[in-house]
Amino acid sequence: MPRVWYICMDEVPGVPLHKVIHTLSPQQLDHIASQLKAILDEMHSISAPHLGSVNGGPFRNQYFYLRSLQPKKVWTSVPEFIDHFRQLLMLFGTVEYTEELLADFPQDGAFCFTHGDLIPQNILVNGSTITGIIDWSTAGFYPAFWEYCRMHEEASNYPGWSHILDIIFPAPRREREIAAFHRLRGVLEYNL
Image (cartoon, rainbow, N blue to C red):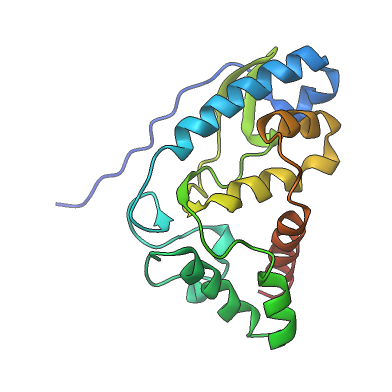
């Protein structure tokens, strides 16, 4: 008997945050930030014994580029995760460049359930109420820094998003991590 797969979908009210963020007041942005922080806290409380896909296997998404270069296994530590990118970068970069870029990522720390692409385009709102989060294709268990860096990549495009991020992450911005993440994605997208 053949396997049968289903996709269940439901229509969620609201519009993508990026379409209305410029119209929202500081109080509305604060309200969105408090909801998003609660969502992130709940997501990040979900743990797994390894880094990888939500189905328990290795990652299979756009962050791991060519199918032939996608991970063959799950990782049990952040250094193993970073080493995967080291191997990719070494295909077309120097040792010095690779090590300089990867040195800005924390080499230890926790990993947690992560959306992977939690940016204004993927957050639905109705007024200042979050009604849904869409596009879970990159979700999985990543190092704790991954979600933080990806969310900050879009900050310069939307001033209101910067306001939201400053509330969710009140500590000083981790500029070196954000820049390294952006460079890593750029180098891999350009070369692979």
